Image (cartoon, one colour):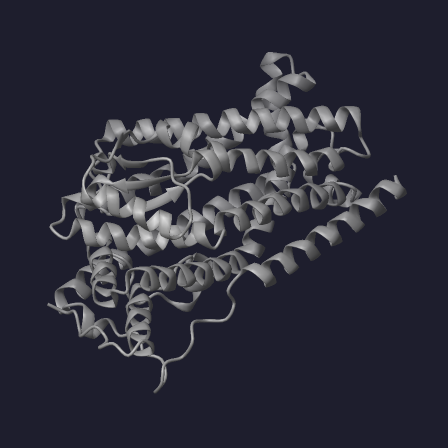
Length: 431
């Protein structure tokens, strides 16, 4: 046992070092050059009218407590179930009518825990949907809302069951070495999921049709060719069934890469210009291999999680407070979930900081490719108005939820880019 624990610790340190070095080399930690005279200060007052700022503030003020509550409950429930005997007792109790066997406990654990988490957050989810409807952001019927929730729940059950069956099979066969194939398997699985995401999972929630031939489609392929990014197709997602928000993205990699436009983006008179700018931003991620970086880091993170989980489950006191005797007990699954939830919270500030830097570089790329800071700023403003984006995010929100620079920061970035290139910066956009 000592040999396996020692090797797991060494591998864990090596993987953490790899992730740190990879992040240091691939994440653009240095911001764009400062233009002469200093950076432009983000200022919503000059780009958004009093009414637009008031509506955004009302919406954010209503939604933020709901988001906080959902996050806190989503953390507390796993911690309570995992760091007390309650989770183990529930799994054994629910498995008892089915014989209470090892396999019965393993099979009931995933749907039980997923159902508990969904039920405790269900009232918050309903309230959030009501608010989104009130502000015109959601167009879903309650039937579609329930369908999306059911699909998400079933998908998590299927993937969770498959992962746990493999994990516990490894624990059964290799009680002291399961972490090694689990780490490799987790890394391979995450890479495969990234490839299959647009082919298997996205079609479960949206319908896709090819973008009609025309100037917009030709221009998007030109942008992709300019970045030497092979794109198989340009698709339109029927997002308008669910939302009035606008978006576009590039998903998949290799043979599964494609450009996807929300159909809500195409109902605007300035659709072509906006779509080009949004896609230029998304192609910036592909050009800078951000997807590959994320997959590599995600694979390393999955392997790190497997090693850390093995080491944590070697602590008798930790198993004791969870009411289990070994990692091979299916009743230890709530403890595993609690450890994963705690690790996610610890890593979240690093993940959001990394994401903000990467997104800022993609903005810089879009500006370089299009040379159009005025329309870039106008597009960002339109995104904020239609999506009711928070124009005044708090430091806490930025730290834990800020995956992108704020819209005022992105508009200021466009002005700085214009000044660095001796162009007139976009004027104030408030109507």
